[in-house]
Length: 448
Image (cartoon, rainbow, N blue to C red; front, side, top):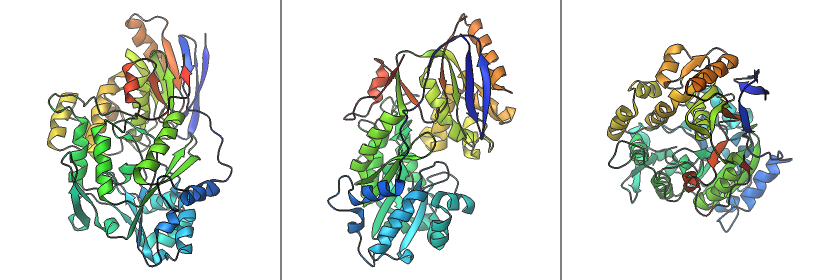
């Protein structure tokens, strides 16, 4: 049975017809109505925060200094809609703009450009706060302060400018993360505004203690029993964060829900909702997964789509991934890790000095050989990923069909993932169920 495909490729849509194979399903995140009044939802969450006995605005007092931690340019959080409501309320409580700083939690990512900062905060807020906007540098010893050590031995060093403020408010968005469990919450602090030493020690827990492989306890959608996530929470608690404000976005990047409150309680509530929105349950994996990374600007961002598509692929199968990557791989550090060439070589180096780019490279070299990319990346970059390049989606599909036919699969099954960066498949009845965060409610929908 033939199927017409319509998928995002960068900022445009591409079409193709698939005249072969058996489509098991189109895997999409749950549809939710857009908020009719986002500002009202934001205000309500601040007035009735989760896990706190008073409104967020009642936590502060006139004359206090406030640090607002925001995410960098690598993720959309809709903080431009949050800040007018938050800062308006702080102003009403007697907190002047001059007493507020905004710190971009870049972790080990590159710093956002002024243009990106304006886009993140919104033009009006950026104009008001520009002179008090700072980007965290994990290697700037003059602006790092040691605040303690976690039970797993991670030394917690964070941004001194943030820690010196009377109040700390962390913003972000919650998605499922492949080794942190979920984004948002604790991750705004560790790794967001932490030192390279702190980040390296925490991320090293992603590796098995005694073998050259990943730690099986470090899983997507797991907060409890996940040593990386638990260590992040311990570190973030040492930073005495007063509250968080986390959004959950729909596939169009619009605010679906807002969660404000205590560091862990509000984050867990957001994680429960995010999991119900972004996850799909499938009964079996397919020989082929056709996925779009949407408007991801580089391959580091596109890796999320590759990771998710891989979860729905039968071992030995193929992934056709549309990932324009107009800005390249995304980091020379990421490329340098990829040049090590094998999982074992990357693991050996990660044991010496762990960093997020190495972790992403390790995941990439595992999954890249299964992928046929429709991309603007140069051939050399695609080779580093271990993937194969195709000029068009039609060519990619034909290459996948030929590979599967050679493997003895003449009538392959396939899934289509139009929003693969957001959609996380879990297999019903498999060990993948262990990836679910204990205490959270069940998945909302199951696919054939």
